Amino acid sequence: MGRISKAPVITLVAIVAIIGAIAISDNFRDHDPTVSAEVIEVIHGNTFVLDIGMDAMEGIGAEIGDDILVKTDDDSFLVLLSPDTKYNGISIYGGYLADVSGRMTLGFAYCNHVTIDIDVGDILTMSREGRDPNVDRIPNYLKGYSDDPGDYDNTIVFGNLREVVGGDLVPGSIYRSASPWNAGNRSPVADDYLREQGVESIICLNMNEDEVAEYADRMPDAYASELFREGKVSCKLLRGAVHSYPGDIVFVIDSLLESDGKMGIFCTKGKDRTGFYCAVIEGLAGATYDEILADFMESFCNYYHIEEGSEEYEVIAKNYPQRVLYLYDHTELIPHPEKVDWDSVEFEKFDPEEVFTKYLVDYIGMDADKVQKVKDKLTGAI
Image (tube, rainbow, N blue to C red; front, side, top):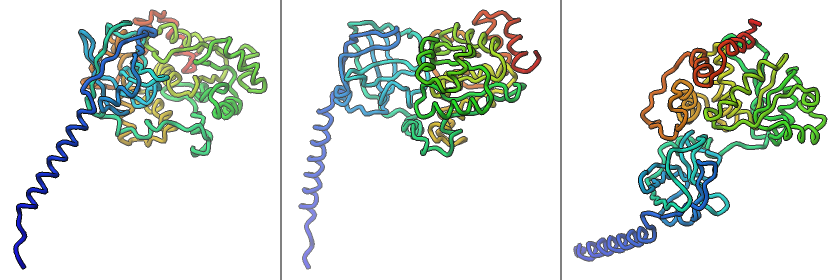
């Protein structure tokens, strides 16, 4: 048998390599390295509507879950290309870029105002900086939660229902849940829970009194509606940016002092705003840092099927509740948390009672005697 010449093989390899190089070149030629966008609307000082859609981001090869470098005339920062504005996958206080009704919207999670100087008419330049390092580590969180009770082990998990505990908090005095009014399939479950626990007054964190009155009229047989008609509901529409609205925590403290008997507390799903304010309640009652963090994360385990102690659990804890807790201990950073270099922050445990007391008295300006009075009520001293 004759020897096979190597020349045709080498030639074939060379041709394939050239074709591959051309294909790669064409692929990159299809994607410009940057895209420019004009700011056409500014909402609440921290959300910016751009004149481009998702197709423009796809034009630079960007995909959901990528980090996008945004440049202004004198600043630059990273944001996450997100599937929506619900912040899934976005570190709290971090920036996001999402398609809202065909327009890309740039915003910052739970930031009241941002220091970045952006106004209508400004031109932003954006480029893809690669995949966000956290995205692939939080698959359940990114997938989102279900509204089907059949997807959960039991109604307690589905409704995010539990007693608020920790420190010297009086046992059986406060219960947290999803809303008994406007949480979809979870509402009847939450309402039944409040009735079963014998809750005598409730603190609603996600609606004002007029809105609650509408639900009470619409759902007259609900236990929560009965309490509303009896004047036993304290309600206010609180914002997620808990540090930015001092009046919101004052409302919660006043509601605790004015409420009688067993209390229920909730927002819509009973996990974010409820979690933030339950953290303060627990801390004032003497709960430890670990107890507070575990209670906050329990809601994420309930909703997103996240396993306690998993990598996903640790990533969310670090990028969500621990950042919130950090600001209680570093109030000088509260006005603009989006400017904090969170990757370099070392999260150290602290004494919650000491830190929350200092936050309420020194930062919020609450009377020290009032703070002590609510502590005494929470722990049964009065």
